[in-house]
Length: 386
Image (cartoon, rainbow, N blue to C red; front, top):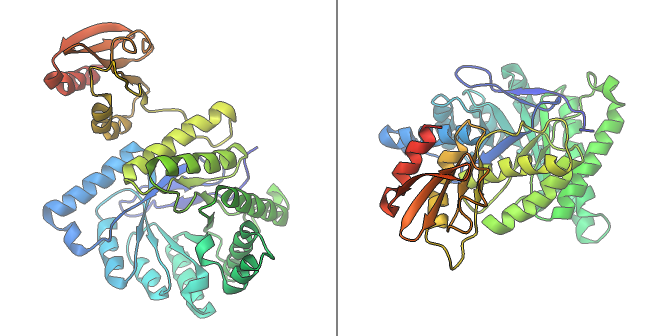
């Protein structure tokens, strides 16, 4: 059974398209912009490139894109960008409540704060009041590295598990929000440890459901949607592995309304990893809210001494484009005749090497033979003709 949570709409105003989170809606993939955003990044060709990249991320399956907003200038730059794109953008804010207030003047779809470091109750109330008036949800983000001092001491003294401290910190923040009558809230509790991430989310999910008294209590005391992820997961291979284990366990248990695979790598690879996790989990544990299995499925061989085709280079070049296609097809990228049309005969379209030639095939039947320098062009033509 999937955990019950309140449904939230993120976006759906101005030119920003709506994204629905929680309430049984499909799990949403998020990523985060990797660099500081300034006005110079949005001028002329640079601005066109930023908007185009965001458009590609959206096509690849990204539902929400978060930006660090360390000061008012960054808030205003993000506000300008938010008016240029349709993908809902999220402002990540710490320490200065005035930055959050400024972000709410623009078509920025969601705010992420940690009320514990925003300041006094009056400052938190100012942010919540304006967000409520604007109809913008807020995510409470709690990380293992920024626990409240009293909880940090208990963890350091061995008197409280880190996972329980994360859940306790999140509950404290939820109390603040509820005192001010703010219900458009999501929660995340992230740690770099797999076990802590899983356990913290399970603890909070159980507590919130018990406090809500089941589905009959949702209207009065909504169970917040959960954004799940492993923070500081690592470089590509380590980060995907750790994230897959943590997110897979939570999703298989019905916990998680949005996900992010945090990698020391590109945004595109974060989105691809998220898509593949959401595609893989239902194979072992189907759950309500799993996004429909759609989009290109890529099969590629690992390459060995028999290869006569650069599968690694070809795959790297083509991944973003293939994942941007709204097509339910299988594509095979194979290195030699051994692992070519025969083992990949199920593929709607495939490419492999054979000596000094490149073979393009469909369902195991070779349909075209070209030289290596023509491979990309020929593959693109056949893909277009599917």
